[in-house]
Structures are given as C-alpha cells and as structure tokens.
Image (cartoon, rainbow, N blue to C red; front, side, top):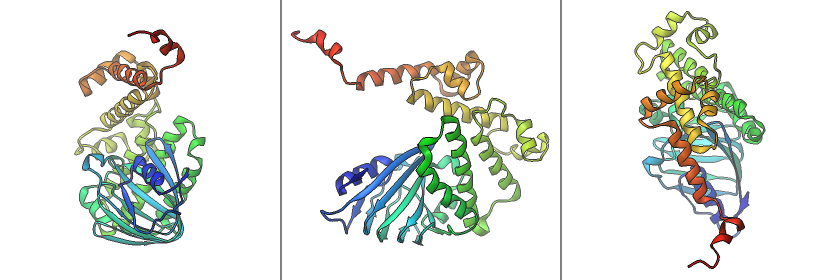
Length: 317
C-alpha cells in the first residue's frame, strides 16, 4: 500500500519494526509498504523518500525476531549497537527490533526479512558482533541471500504451503551461512558447522513424514552413529529435535487456523492422532484440542454480526 507518514508508520510498526521518528518527513511524505509471509518468515518491501530516522526501542517481549535488511535501490547509513554500516544496492545488514537504531537514507527501496531468532542459532555475543555490520551483497553467501530475499518478497504469494515452508527453510539456512561468514574469526568448529547444516535441513523438511535419522545421515554422507555423536552434547537428540520442532509448528498452526487437530498433526508428520494428542499434552501441559476451541471462540467474538444474527434481537430490552 502507498500512504502518508502516519499510515506508513502504523503499517511499519504493525509489521514488527520499532516505532520510527522521521526527521525529514513532511506533509508530502509518500511511502510504499508491502508485507508478505513465507512460512515463518515475514517479508516487508519498502519504498521510501529520503529519510533520517530514529527507531525507538521495542519492548524486549517483542524480541521473537531478528531482521535482515536488504537494499535494492539507494544508499543507507545505519547504526545499531556498536555497528555502523554504509549500505548500497544488494548489501544487507542484521538488525535487532528490540534495540534503538538510527539511519539516514536517500530515496530507497529495500526488503526486510523478519526471521525467528531461534532459527538462526546465534549466541547473544555473536548477535552483538553482527548487529549493524554491513554484509557484502555482491558475492558469496551474502549475494545469494540478497537475491533470494528480493525475489521471495515478489513471489511469496505464489507458493503453496508446503513449498513456502521448505523455501523459508532454505532462505533461513543461507542467512545463517552469510552471518557465519561475517563472523570471520569466530566461525564455529567443523562439527558445529555440520550440526547447523543438519538443523537447517531438518527445519526445511519437518512436513516430510519420512524425515528420520537414517535419511538425514545419508543426505549428509555420514553414518547414523556419527549423526548421533554430533548431537550427544546438545539439549535434544536428533529424533527429539524433529519431534519438538514438529510440535511447535503444530501448536502455532492450531492456534492460528481453523484446521482440525488430526489434519494439523498429519500435516506435520504425526500419523497417529492418539499418540500426537498424548505427546502434545505431555509437552505443553494442555490438550491440543483446547487450542482449536480457543481459536474458534476468538473468531466468533471478532466476527461482525450479520443480519440473521442481529435480527432476532431487535426490539428486545
């Protein structure tokens, strides 16, 4: 949508950005914002005039996501944390919506990808190092992320659900690779790099009912024993990681859609509804069906009353 400053700022804040104060904006401000979702990712395309902005810090409880900003047109100087980045076309930068930021920009077009921070598997110290640092979008993994972010923002609505989830997994993995490369001397050990690749592989294939340790090991040209050894010092085994991530996807879908428990469970690889229900309650402490009941009640409360609903009450005191 294209809007004036107030409308634009409202849409921006609703998309997950910190509130912005634009020192250059006047009555003639016109900005364009388009938001699309790709699986767990939110893609926000912005077209803005020359700007000088301060982004006020969001509450820490809003810190589910990190943001990758990719320039398409124009130039931006951005500061956050200890980082100072001068961005040109195709360049990208990691930002944290819970931290104050400042930037100055020419008339510009850019795409921001909001990524659940748990998906990037970054330690707090690594995030501190990466925030506000320019990542070259002209070559290497940065170039792949730059191209994919811009193309995904244009075509996200053309994906079917399963395609969107797998594509989002691929984008997340490439972002992780680009950030890892930017860390330079803090690159993880070989085992950690392999484990991260495997975690990304799992994330992209959670809906595949055949996802299992033997298949994962074969896809990475290692033995099943080697696979289990990679995860022996982690909080979850490979099988437990698959199960937990599938449960998290089920919980999110049950809370936000009208689909049945059985349909959602099957969608994420649980073929036995009874087993799924027991596993869900053991993990979260409440029944999966309670989410669908709550979602239906919420939808009913927010749905405008139609003539057939209002008519029966006319004239009553």
